[in-house]
Every structure is written in C-alpha cells, then in structure tokens.
Image 1 (cartoon, helix red, strand yellow):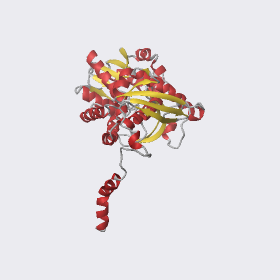
Image 2 (image 1 turned 60 degrees about the vertical axis):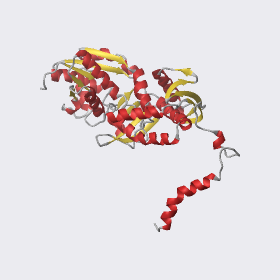
Image 3 (image 1 turned 90 degrees about the vertical axis):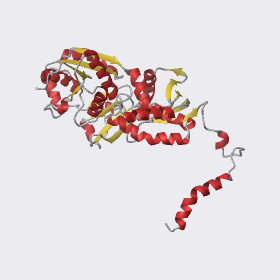
Image 4 (image 1 turned 120 degrees about the vertical axis):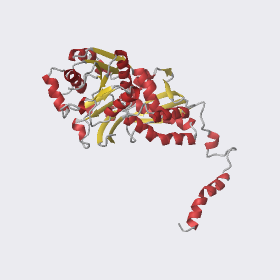
Length: 400
C-alpha cells in the first residue's frame, strides 16, 4: 500500500489506459481521483468523457477547452522554429503533453491536491514529457505512473481488467492499436503497426483521404503570415485554432500530411508511428516559403542549425527547460519581418509552393536577373572566387 494521499489529479482521456487507471488509483490509494480532460481538438472523442469519468468513479471532472492556447502558444512556437523530429515527425503528440501537464498542475493548485498521474507507459516518451513538466512547474508534487507500478504487462491485460470491472472502452482484442488525436494531428501505434513492413489499413485514417481518392482538380490556397505567425486564409482572418481547423479540412480533402516513420524514442528503442498532419504540413510548407524571401541568409542558416536541437527538446519533453526558453526567444527574434502571403497548390497528397510575396521581401529581381542589369558587375565574381579558393590552392600546392 502506497503512502496516504489526499487527492490525485489524473490526466484523463476516456480511452483504455486512463479508464483503467482511474479505477486502479481508487482501489490502490483509497482517495479522491479528479479527472482532468484537455480539449485539444480531438473532436467526437471528447463527447461523453465527463459522464464516463464520473461513472468510473471520479470525484470531480475538469474539461477545459485549450484549443486556442494549444495552437497559439505551442504549435505556432514550433512552427516558427520549423521544428520537425528526424526529418518526418511534426511533433503533434509531443507538443501537446506539456500543455496537458501544465493544466493538471493548475488543477492541483486549485483543488489542493498532492499528486498527479498519467496513462503513459514505461516504454514510451510521454512519461518523460509529463513528468518533466510536473517537476518543472511544481517541485513538491507526488507523481504516480501506474504503468511502472502495477502488474499489468500489456494492453491486453488492461482490456481484460476493464471487461471484468464493467469499464466501457473503445479498444477490442481484434483492434488493439491506439490513436492519439488533437487539432494538430492524429497518430497511430501498436497492433499490426508494430510490424514496420505492414502497410497501414486505409480505414485507419481519420483526418485525410488517400491521395488516390483525392480530387483530380488542385485546390489553391493563400496564407497570410505576420512575424512568422499565420493570420489569415484567402484574405480572411482567423483565430489560431480556427485557422488550423480550416487548413486541416482543406489538407485532409486533398490527402496532405500522411507520414509513416520509424523513430528513435528518448528511452532508447525504435518505434513505428503513422501520422496525419494535414494543416500542419501546409503551414510548415508555407512558412518556409515566406522565410525564403524575407529572412537574411545567415540568420536563416543560424536558425536552421537550431532545428534539430529544438525538435529534440520538444520530443524529449523539455518544453519548460531553461535551454528551451533561450531558444524560443532566439527564434522569435529571427521571425521579425517574416511577413507576407504564400500561395500553395494542394493536389493528391502534394503541397506545392506556387507563389510568395511580401512588402518586406529581400528578393530583388534587379539583382537576381540573368538579363542585363546595372546593379551587379559580373567581373567582380572572379576575385570573389579566387579569394575563396585560396585555401584549396594552397592545400594542393603543399601536396595534401
């Protein structure tokens, strides 16, 4: 029996793991369990979750709509940095966890609770993301990680436990893979996906149509950026959450944003993940296009050198670390004047840049033209090349 606790705030989703955990915490610790549910834009999955938590035994349920904060303060922060993990993953799950944990700590302080809990397994990244955030925001909080404490060894064990205890769950023995969905993406893992040679079933996807079934006619869209932040679509302004939702619909209809990768988890093992990030893919492509005409070359190259580290910090769970704070401020500085409009063509899984313009553009047709001009003397390039080749010539002369 663990040490006596007063109240536990559980990050609750209504899925298999947290449904079982809610009941297990009550039985194991004999105290109040408060369920916290973050509405991150998971859609229909949020409906009925409060009633389900209460029916499973929660003393109180908090359901908080954090969609605008999620996009404004988390997704857009990653977008400005062009954060992408291992060249493929746009960090849709990774970036949501610190927000959920932050809100849990707010409930802890509101309720006078002394412990938090989550449903992350002892093999994955989420346990690290949750717990690093808990400790960064409340150094005295007790943390309960059931997957590292109980005797269950697999999700099949949880399914049996749920059935034995009358807990309704959305997972069956025949379809054991899990889904994590929010406004930014949907991710899929486990089950048949654990075989990296096995192609995902088409019926699994929930945000996008397959490129083969996408419309035969391309969809053009224009996105307005201001200081690196998306502000409007086709000349119309949107709030952060509504802008992303609108692009999700456009991208999803055109098969944009599917990724199938084997990634390196922080704990050391490789894991296969399948992701849908339609709106996020459009935004990343558009953001890069605006940067291409508004950012100084050396500033861009310096910021790009930070991308692997920033992406790693997000993936590993160090959102509230001092190094991440410094990098956020640095990236914000690089985004001044990343302002303008990009035109994109969405067609059968492809997001293609076809135009970009900005009043703050550094691009000059007069300088770039191959035709006759008055601003650039091509003879100057000879000395430039000779100076840059000097070390190469010396190396050769020395017989190296």
